[in-house]
Length: 107
Image (tube, helix red, strand yellow):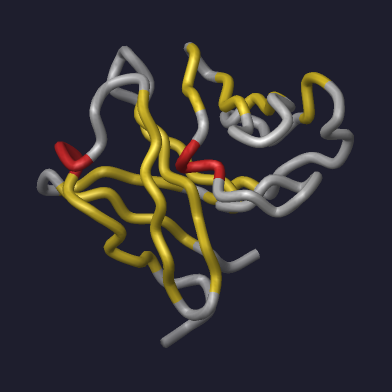
């Protein structure tokens, strides 16, 4: 499979509005988010601080709060917003087609 191929991650309805789920593929862990206005985003699935699964965190608007030390990221850009996190998350393109969420994990 090509590195930049679209990967079928989940059904769009698998994610509640203002929530996040974990998606594992090809040895990598991703976090897939749904905003309150039904936009979808994907980032690395592990916090850049202590590598905790972000899918266990709290979504508030477009922010994910890590469940371990409460560091926050803007999941639309990956930007680290509050200590102790200081390194940004990688973000990945997402599209929704036919009720399915796809992400592109390549560069």
